[in-house]
Length: 269
Length: 311
Image (cartoon, each protein chain N blue to C red):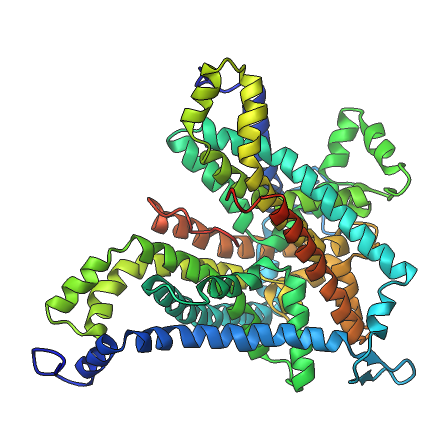
């Protein structure tokens, strides 16, 4: 009979693994307060909060990338919400020829390395002479965000009994009323979770973006440039905290929204 | 049939009637926009990539010659390019093995022993690093691995600096600090892709039925034997699924080796540099086809090994 207590070595390895996953991120917070701006000296020679003020007042180069990132993430999320929900609705409705192929097609932009998606879009823009703009970035982001919304929506559709849609129709509601009063309240939290995850993913994306942005700079691209050619390193940490919060909070919220029954909230980033 | 029993109250009702009589119409309306988007934007782009990889670049003018040729693919077989491919595949294989070894205890503990709030904590504990900002995570490791960073400090305090120096003097892994050595690149790859290995592994382990473990014990197997001949084979599909992620993601990544490592080229970096500064889009496209090809072979092997039947 298997004992219900875990071996000590296993416990240590498991918790050690979790610590390994979490500790590095804490350092980002510590280094935002260091007084040393030229190197990554540890322990920091002194602590200060001035970098938050510096980032806010003295670094106008942070704002345009931030706006662009917010704009791209917002538009991509809306597009992914529409396309992903439509796709999930269709897939949950019927079994038809080519269904598996469509699932694969939705998954592909996430399953293949970002460099392939990025390079593909870059070649397509090249072939068709499309100049880089906000929309070329959105094109890439919306494509890989669809699967996030789709995964969340399809899980909810699966749990939703078809009976309530029939009941709604029997009570005289047309398709649009059923959608507004029955389907949407039931899908709501799953779509909200999917939308937030898509937003977090888009806000943070860098690999595909470097291929589709041309000379434009999103916040992750700004960060990447700071990593390669640093100036005022702690300011990069302040921005990193902002990026971390902008992705961390939606993920946590999405987890609580889809908890219970559906474990698909973040499956397959 | 005259449609609804009640009189139609507007266009909404009439459309509902139409959808009722022709269910495929609604299906078509729903599936068309996402299918068109993915078909045109994504598959179209992939086609453009393939197309460009069969073009070549005029060596004197640097202009892309839009004529079919295999010359660009032949260039992949130059020693320096083969070197890049070999280095990337080796790194991907090493990262996958390390991820599997590190992920197993976490996945095993979470699947078999964690209960109630601990289960949720483990799930979130894997999920949050998976989703939190990629660049922030890479940056955190830059802070850790830098010469004056926390690892160096800890080594100095515990007088174990010789371990790091020893690692850094191994031929092929040299660097002035861990952050400029391939060891650093490897560590960061393992860190970033680890959650992708844990989740499918845990899912596979959770599907191992309790009754099988009891049957194994009833038949006289020790816990070690049960682990080796029951749990491990049943968990294998999860390991393979996870390895597909870690392998494929490492093959295509170009940010990590650019920030942490000795600036030796990887496939992703080659693609990025060729399409950017070098302006050689055909060769960049051909390089991007390489990971697709490798992944297809990998998936085929995994399928032949029966990894998908058990999923």
